[in-house]
Image 1 (cartoon, rainbow, N blue to C red):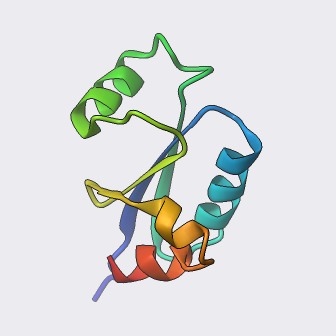
Image 2: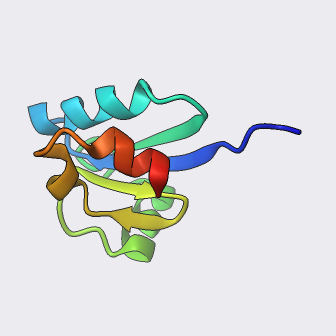
Length: 87
């Protein structure tokens, strides 16, 4: 049986906090990670559609399997990795 892979989408603007979240997410196992850099991709149709779909209004934002994660609560307590794996 094939391992389940989580789909993780990270919305960033290239700031240091965003980079810390990207580094953490990229280190996770069994995850397919897509990064949307709103600063660089502000006119990319796929990026714009994802922002609208998930109603992204701040960065960094983390979406796990289609659900927005309240990463701030977990990142500040060093529990973001645990929350992504358990989500």
